[in-house]
Amino acid sequence: MIRKAFRLSGEPILALRGVRALADGLMAASFAALLYVRGFDERALGWMITATLLGSAATLVAITRRPAALQPHRVLVLSGALMAVTGAAFAATGWMAILIPLAVVGPLNPTGGDVSAFLPAEQAIIANRTGEAHRSTMFARYSLVGFIGAVVGALLAGPTASLGRFLGLQSTNGIALAPAMYATIGVAVTVVYWRLGRAARDVAGPSRTQTRLIESRRIVHELTAVFALDSAGGGFVGNALVAAWLMKRFDFDLGQTGAVLAVASAASAFSSLLAPRLSRRFGLVETMVFTHAPANVLCILAGLAPTATVAVVLLVVRALLSQLDVPPRQTFVMTLVPAHERSAAAAFTNLPRSLAAAVTPPIAGWLLYKSSFGWPLIVGGSMKLIYDGLLLARFRQHSTKV
Image (cartoon, rainbow, N blue to C red; front, side, top):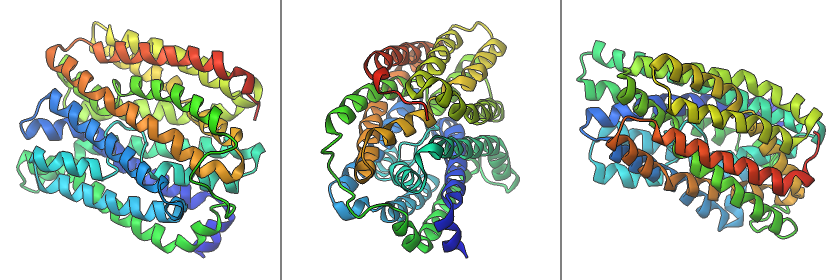
């Protein structure tokens, strides 16, 4: 029954995306507090985020070096196993010398987004099983369940720590329940993808799947370079860094921080439903740029906010717009390349994004360490505005209304 459902629809992929997003949302909201109670500061936070993103990039490098590894079901099972191991390690130890290498190995991503090896595998399955007319809608649903999962995960951050204290654990161990839950979800995801392995191979698309781009190489390389700038800017404003800024600038506790991130994720979730309609009316690139640019202006203004209320309002309104570009972006990449190069294109575009996003968190952490002023939001928003301009100037002629 499970395999039949998997063959006939994308629902299992969407459900697993939501569960993984819950785990990521929980860790993104809890990550700064987890490091703080273990004696680390914002500089360590920045380097740890970099380590996790480099780990995602290293995994993408590994799977793109072998044709067999690009089969989506194998990538998904391996990623789930690494998720379980990484979460268990973060729950068990506070030694930075151990945590940083483990962060590099696993798919942990405290930024609140998803740049792991799960992403290209799931994108390839969805693209190959969905007709062009409905592809943007399917990617919008994919994003929606991810945002909903992130909302639930962020809301669980405060109760998770409280549960630890209720059980009589010390504060450090109480907060460590978050990575323990992350590890448990990793085990569950691994088991489910293992059971769905044969069906996942069935829906993975043509057997001509390639690890190298040939027909679409030039345009994918150009597009990836522009995406990398956006990701570098996003490295300044990942959820863990925003949480750390709220804690330092406005003295928020873990429950308040989790609530803000949850509301922002909810705003992103439901606004993303508009993306397919906007794409069909205005075009993929136009939708990406004209929703993303105002969001980045709001990000800059949030960094300048004089009060917590103003900052939270600006962050939530920004969230209403900031993720409307995600379904069109995923659709745009899949539309530009032939079917047999989709797995390679998804992996290739996500790899530089992971690397770029890994460069800037230490700078953001250093800025937070030096001052509670919103420099990370201002710098990140400015970089992402430049990305919007470049994307519109270079790729508008390739835009389609789907």
